[in-house]
Image 1 (tube, rainbow, N blue to C red):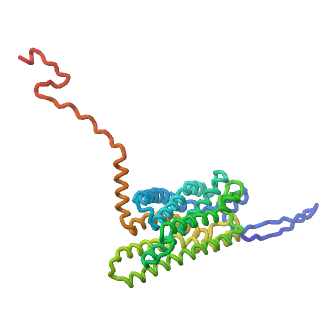
Image 2 (image 1 turned 135 degrees about the vertical axis):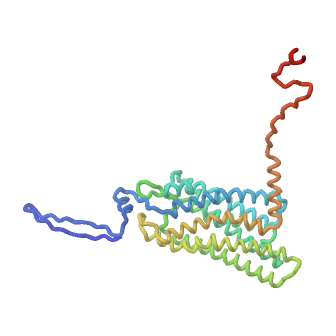
Image 3 (image 1 turned 90 degrees about the vertical axis):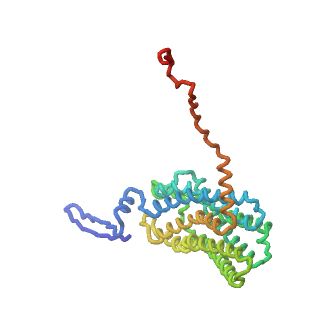
Length: 362
């Protein structure tokens, strides 16, 4: 926005009067009207239409899928294996992510106005980031586990006790990173009509660099595990463990695709977006970086929907165990009673409402 000052002199007989006109250039009508009324609500279809629509899809598809996957992992009787411990914790992280979406969907549908108390804003934001980065940690541990299994490396993380310790450490570290979000105020007034939640960008550049660093480290580990598994497959072509190695490659490839498609766009655009928001005004129209960031958030949420699909194609007997569980659930459902059948008519019995008489007998 630029401001142009124009001065006009008028010289009446009594005293001179200086009229100063201020012309605002580079603002649209909605922004100018918003400033005049003390309000600012720029139109943002990417944030207020695409994002809540994607969250609704993820909630309706991802939450049932992850709950079903969790039940399959718990009832299959193989929880003592290290890979199952990692998969259970990854599924729990996806479920926690899905449970935050009922808070964010009304927020974006209300055009960025938080109507709930401050404590719910802190909790929703903290669990959102806790679930996102713990899922990244568990995908990294799963990729390491698959590589160690294919390469026949005897590491502590490839044993049940080591897997349990690794999951606990991951949860504790991610929770420690989310504690500042719980301890500080996360809502603030934007103008006089809306309350924003988790949209304070001043001084957040260091957090953005830390998030990008965590993503880069996890992505490099998953990429290295996939390339190592590919080398092992090429070196051991035709061995008796080919099927097991191919399933390990499929799982790590699925994790790598999740990082590339869902996680990478968010972190690659995070630092430029935070810098742009720190230098732009609150009433500015959405920029290219704003739209790119909102699109990356929608892609990030799809992570919890893709993970159950990876389980179906990369885990032996997952589909069989899922179908067995579905049949058990169907058997436990109460079946409707069949309608009573009418009494059959006999030859010696007259139909109802028909009376016999001497005339008919004769």
